[in-house]
Length: 240
Image 1 (cartoon, rainbow, N blue to C red):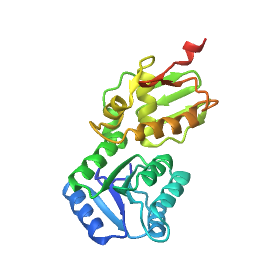
Image 2 (cartoon, rainbow, N blue to C red; image 1 turned 60 degrees about the vertical axis):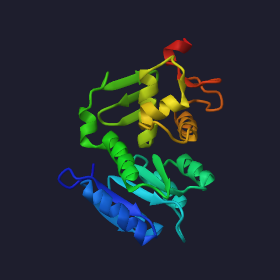
Image 3 (cartoon, helix red, strand yellow; image 1 turned 120 degrees about the horizontal axis):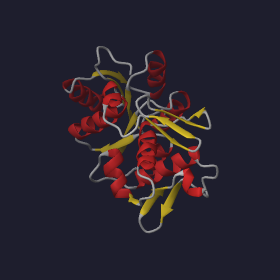
């Protein structure tokens, strides 16, 4: 993690200086080092020059909007955590942002405290302390999938998987709990730590994960739909 003395480094990207200043003050109060970018082009240049630990990204910006910034970040830095800021009525854009690989979102108008909690939740998954958290196994294997939990890397048939923070968390959780059907609400609570939220977040992440680990995402053999419930994971050995 690109930290200075263990301090999380966050890049806030928003063309509204009032919003970015409020977010900066709350994050600094929470112990983060904060940089600001007012447009997408500057944000991409700053990430390339000195990658932060997390990006807070407003979707609605003039010129290069947040969706395109997220798309480009995922091409070059698939594991860099991204938390989106979206307007309340922008459900389609929010879903598209999740499709592009954002790890979390907060809707405007938002509580700065809620945003800080969401950011902390994501950083806990990726920071140095994540490797010291108790886990049932350090390395999980299921057929041609291998996931190293402390290093937060996964591979399929020896090829690295470009997983976002939440995709990795979801994969690990499902492999550790095979056979059981989980509702979307339960997965939100277990993987995202949300007691409430938009359940389409789970749907989008399951679809993205299927595209990366299934031979045929349209006919999945690992992440199965439990009709009327949610999803369940079947280990490869269950297919033999």
